[in-house]
Image 1 (cartoon, rainbow, N blue to C red):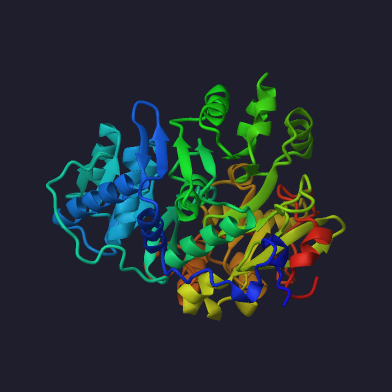
Image 2 (image 1 turned 90 degrees about the vertical axis):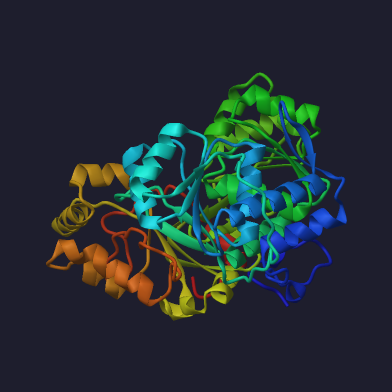
Length: 495
């Protein structure tokens, strides 16, 4: 039977035979891969060399034992904030295996942002690579245990390692805070597993693949796409401390890598390199986190032969859509729904989409309360359009005040945002006579419908939408293009 995402599946795989949550959680799936091939190379970083799957399994068990011996227990929150390293990956995986809830924190945050996240998440421990950041966390959290990425603590043992269910919380990822302070979104183990399984299938990721991973590990692109996918596929990764075009291309050549994932700014720098043709060595290049300009896509194709796969996701839902591995990869489009995801387009304009609505079946299974939210359990991602008429100006002023800023600051900060509300409710809080109650109303709505899970401390920020569901003002070219003719192949509901 055809599904909205059947075109992503390899030949011979029937959609009805797929259960993205069959392995319950990523730690359980990873442990099976390591046991099946303990001698296989897993992670590489300069000065350390290759680490095998079996050695990584033992190392993460040891770190989990130390964290447990220090008093950390299932569902305790732990801040993770450090530059990419093998030690950081060990600490992260160990925390997940123990059942801790990891809170990735951007190492570039200053004290104000760090303090906000720490007071919101209330972690009893933090793993950081900077003494000053550790001091900020200790000031904000009081008696929090501050550790380095090596987690130098007395050894201990854990009897129930990896004993996790799809609904157990795994991550609290803080969004960028474009409408104020960063907001926490809870991701369950089922979310992580389903998303990684979806891209593994769609991108034909196997144990023969080797990824050059130059993305930061505090963001879902590097963490939930690059790292999770590598470990789930049974493949390997070459970690880079930072992105440098020459270092990436040298790693591709030296380690015979097959995969590279990046953001458009990375591809821009690679396209300017005299070595750009070396991208042709790779089986697959993927771009995300921001739109890849069609002109840049075409330049990379003409120089290297690479047809970059563009995809789309959010912090709250992980990966939603992707161009296909087999078939046309359309520049300027993010393709069609990934396995386990359905999309519905709303507010269609010829060639462009003003509103994309997605629902992830794994999210619904992991959090049954989500089914009560929105119409048909759809999660809405909106592009905010700014008009100049009196109604739009008044609404902007209202939202700016509710967000603690002025209209110019609000407009400059807010390119895209998410909203958890139906059009009627959006209109209700947008036109509320008491601006100070705006965020409280949104927060109440989000919690009432279980949108962020029981461990969420705050709801995400709101966008501006009128009661008829259309953005304010005249439609402008969206930052992310959803090609209607392409997405019709993966649509659920009326266009």
